[in-house]
Image 1 (tube, helix red, strand yellow):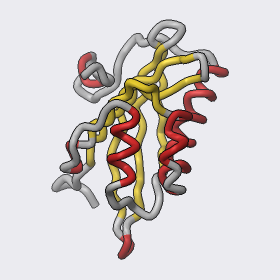
Image 2: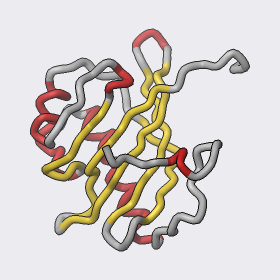
Image 3: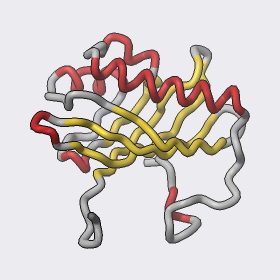
Image 4: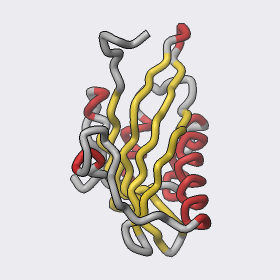
Length: 150
């Protein structure tokens, strides 16, 4: 489980002193994360090679789902489960891990039937492949309201 160790450097969850990514790389990574939401919403499981590496792992145990791997297992898992109305990704923090890797922390919003919204974080490990940037590992965390939440 190599997914982003965001809390290791400070109590507020932000890494300190991580290497910034060049703008082109960042835009390519953001494009892949955006495409993920479109593909899931379109149920285009056959296009998951455009967002996941062949050896990818998807850990959504926070949603009481089994860890899915490799990419073919993610495709099968997604095809067999229900999904929210939409998958929206925002607040991306991209930090380079050398020239061909990065960690990404983002927030997600998933509108559900009845007007509720599921929200949480994606902690991703992304790598540059011959086909472009791809998600190697995604860990889902669900955010629950705190006592001081409005």
